[in-house]
Structure formats: structure tokens, C-alpha cells
Image 1 (cartoon, helix red, strand yellow):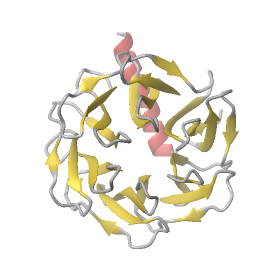
Image 2 (cartoon, helix red, strand yellow):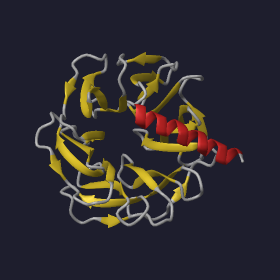
Image 3 (spheres, helix red, strand yellow):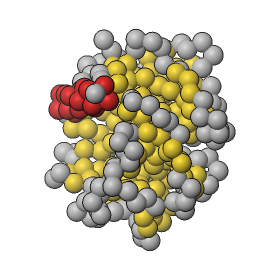
Length: 285
């Protein structure tokens, strides 16, 4: 009963957040003392931040100019630059390992596809062109492959394609949704979240789709995995009702620890290249 109540509360909160775009900001958390440094401060929805590979910039999406677009800024909140514009919704951006290219999700007319562009926003190019919802892309460390999620064969599954969008192959097969795939630093593993066991949990698998293994096991909604720079841990978002918190799980032992301050709702985080901080989205109260 408690499980279904949690799912109901999550559904209410998620619907409210998407329809009303609740204000959210970008912040940085230090591991040493859990200090929270606010990077943006406004009444808009600044979301899905990701650290640049050189550690100098933050990529994020925001509705601050009406439509949802991708932006970059400095760690202190200065030097903001808009990368995309127009009526379409662009989000879920991720840097290539060398920092020269950005993958992202493009939504128009109720459909989403995977796009790529230069890091300055030029040469925006479509990689998938399918009536299904293709999105949540991530680069392989060598930049040669792209992992993404799609419902082109029913529920959401994890797929792989070459960097030019060709050679699409399916990695997961289940009756429930699988999404948010992300490559390990060495390229040998892919983390993702799946609802195959009745609740969203964090999983890993080999980059060819084999050895699919569940890491988290609880009644909360676990999502958005992100690898530590050394590949030993996964950062993820845990959602219970209206509350989001950040957790880390060791991929070998399964040990978990919460890294976000108690009483603060934050999630959708990304590790710094140095491994001593994370950048996150949080909801001011």
C-alpha cells in the first residue's frame, strides 16, 4: 500500500512540475563539507545541469526566454550564453568528452529526436528521425557511439547508434520503461534506470547490453544515474512524493549514502571532472 501511495504522490508532483514548470535553480555541492553554492537565482526553471569536461562551464536548459532552450554559464553564474532558440523544446544536453560537441533532445509537435551541435550552438544537426520519442542521449568516451532511449518498439528501451545516427541496435528488452542511459568513463558499462521490477531503480549493463544488473532496491523512485570520474560510484536522484534527494551508490558493494542536505529538494545532478563536487538542480522553498 505504501508503495502505491509513493507512486501516486510522485505522479501528482511530476505532473505539476511539468505543467507549471516549477522554479528551480542550479547549485554546486562540495563533498568535503556539503556546502551548497547557488549559481543561478531567478523565478524560472533552470534544469538538468552538466559540468563541462574542462571543469570551467555548466551546460543546462531553461525556460527563462519563453521556450525551453540550452545555455552555458561560468561556475559563478556569469557569462551566460544561449545555444538554442526557437519554439521547439531543447533539453537533456550532454558534452562530448573533448568538449567540442553537445548532444541534446529536441521536441517539436509532440515528438522528440536526438540532435547534435557544436559547443557554441552552431551546426545543429538531427541524428534520429523517427515518429517515436527518441531522447536521453549520451556519448561513448571515444565519441564514436551514442546511447539513447526510445519507445520505437513499444515501451522505452535503451538503444545504441553510431555518432552519425546510423547502425541503430537495441540493448534492453523488457516490458517496462528503461531510460537515462549513460556511459562509464572507460566505456565498458552503461548505467540506466528501469521500472522492470515494478519501481524505478538504478541498473548497469555491459556496453553490448549483457550482464544487466540492479544496484538499488527500495520503495523510492531512483533515476538519472551519473558515473563518478573514477567509475566506482553512481550519483542518482531519489524521489519520494514531492521530495528529491541526491544519493551515491557503490557499484561493487551496493552501499548507498545521501549527499544532499536534509530538507532540501534537489536532483538531476552531474559530477565535476575532479570528483569533489556535483552540480545539481534544486527547488527553492
